Length: 445
Image 1: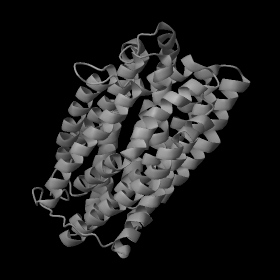
Image 2 (image 1 turned 180 degrees about the horizontal axis):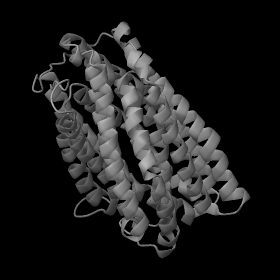
Image 3 (image 1 turned 180 degrees about the vertical axis):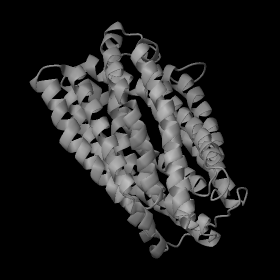
Image 4 (image 1 turned 30 degrees about the horizontal axis):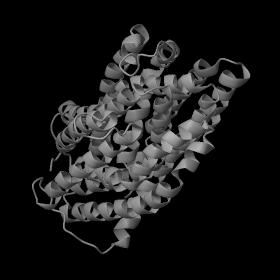
């Protein structure tokens, strides 16, 4: 447990951000391993897993919001020196994660193919994608509880433990990917199923380790095995987390529609889209890290009634994110081929993915603003505004422009990525305006 309400703000930001960046890097390794290894099976398999992951991301939005609710509440209570309340929030958030995974996972296991079919994918891609989704839905609780456990650690000011935990999970995941996807040694050849099995098994082991740390008082807090739901605590988690879930749902659902537009451009466009997204995800890592730092620092400092320090922490996180992500944007623009070739060796996919990455490069500074300022608002408990901004930028900017540029004007995938870039710039500006007004300083949790 770490008190971050005193000392150098920049040091505190870096203290929290660098492990979170490494954690995000390790999470990206899972995506990279899945896409890169599956990509060797063919364009159909690559497209199917890409669509399957898009659907899982849709449901991850719900647990993402609940983990944000837990992080914000725990950070406030730690800042206010109310440790027992922080412990109770952690316990109830795990119970909530288990319940949500069952509510979503059971129907998803039986009807997951319907989600892919709705996207307009070809029959073969639907069949391959459902093989992947069935396993992911069966083990959805492993994904959900991993989110919650990491959120608890971040709330108490510990971003190193999630880093170590994800390091182990991802190393195990990559190893299992190699053996299960391709049927190496005595393991069966499972193809896309192998990628899903590897993800579920590695996260399951990670939950056992993370749970042991939280329930054995190894990290300054000791959760207890409670089976009774405390509705007053659950209500607080949901009150803060639901708008954050709504925000992620908006992004994910808009992403589904956006993907449907991309699907209309053909299999190579789908594959190139996934490769370009994976390439851009390298910039998400620092953005995620500085957003986590801002969330924790704003929450703890507001809990300690240090409003000015909370604001300075947010701006310091933003400065560092702008520098790092702006530099990534330059690399994307100048050397896009090097990133794209990590994921595929198909010349047609590479040819289409490279200009997409170059286009989106110019929006990286505003993407940094979106990450950090949204994280700052969430740390203050203001999760409604990020949801509203997401709705405006996604549904009234990205989707209409993607259809206009991609379909109506006939620019295809390039037009869709131009729309994404414009939306990112507008979204970043809206977050800056909201944060600058300062209403988040007066929110009570």
